[in-house]
Length: 195
Image 1 (cartoon, one colour):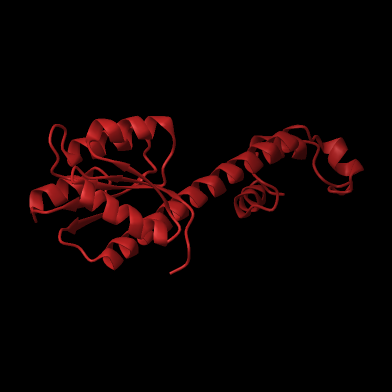
Image 2 (tube, helix red, strand yellow; image 1 turned 180 degrees about the vertical axis):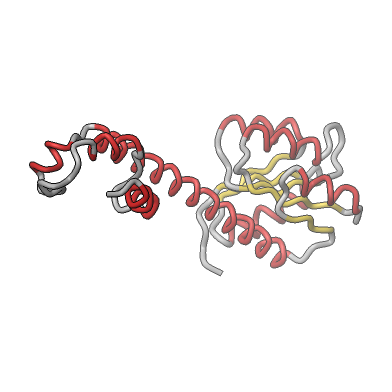
């Protein structure tokens, strides 16, 4: 598996389990922060960002499912893997509804944990890349819309975009249907308007 350089929050009330997970993940190139209860985990989350969290479900005080909801409220993009010693269908369903990527039962295979975590992180990366792509696309559409709104028929003729025979209201039509140049929708709309 390729080395990863991402911050992981490991939350387990059993220090030996948290340390074991942290060491194994650090061998894979991750940077780990260990927390031994929910309150400590929330403090770390407020102090800095994490790509993912491994969360023990059964802990004294606030349980892992409640913690998961609070962590997702702070950082909806946090990838979360739930870890528990008790196989409980209801807990698994609640965890998944709150946004957990996986549910692993102790005793676990460390390689399984790493594989699950890497899969959750890959999904997270795709979501973040997709969001960035859509934001860039929206920015470009707004920019091109602004450019189109500045055009009028004489300017289009001067730039050689329109021939002399184009109707005088062509620029207004472009502004009305302000969509990116070359768009199929713009072409179809203009065609239906008789251009």
